[in-house]
Image (tube, rainbow, N blue to C red):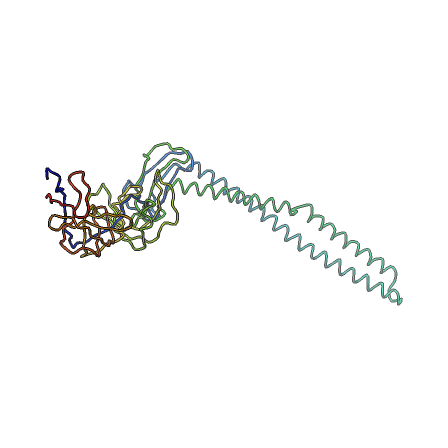
Length: 378
């Protein structure tokens, strides 16, 4: 060894084992159903009916804020609605009455016109006098005058623009009332679904400005894990790949899922080019919280009872893959075919037999080559 004739190397046996290829990355927990309550106006928090961590049911009242101003606005809007509806009702009643009078006046006018026409025909035969004709003409004129007067009333009072104005006033009052009711509902916060209150950053009696966050609720029985896979690894993904989720806050706990959809686009995430995948995780004990960062392992391949060698034993050169098998303290190059691999191991599917001894790295700077004399150092 001192003369450099023999190179010291580390070595390993080819063993049957289980090998697993995986992508290790990170992800973020997202709730499937999420609700944020914000102050709709400057006001004061009156009562907190829940605490952080409480499980709540749909419709349950959670927070009450001072709603006196909103109630006043709602009451005024309701009064405006009733006033507008009364005006519309008056218009409708008058229009119905006027329409009835118009119909009666038209009928009278038509009757008088027929009577005049009949008398004029009778006059030609000498069966009616000119005096009767003149009286009929006067009656027709009065009927036309009455009809014209009613038609003018229809134009002068409660015209179409006035009716449209009354309708607009009612619509405006209704919109103001709906807005006030919406504000009232936001000031008296209720749970929109069964879930967990996980954020309650206010105290009773606190003054809050418009838009201030009051409460956050989420349905955490099942959560979504948004996972970020680096661009070079995206091609290794396949539907059905097992997923294991871990969280540093709970060492040893593993949540399981599978890949259900593949990335459709590569995007920039911080300084990484990634494809995003999401998976659903059962969280019945509510341990995973929204927005926490988790570790994600995506198993892209797993083989049991196959021949495995350390990754550092495998070499590649000009498209060929080979290892150096140690026989009688001498290296013999063996071309091999490999399958799945991970950071430490490679599956060998041909070219080596079980329990064969293969060289790893030399303990000096001399390169390995076929026929090299070596000494295995344990």
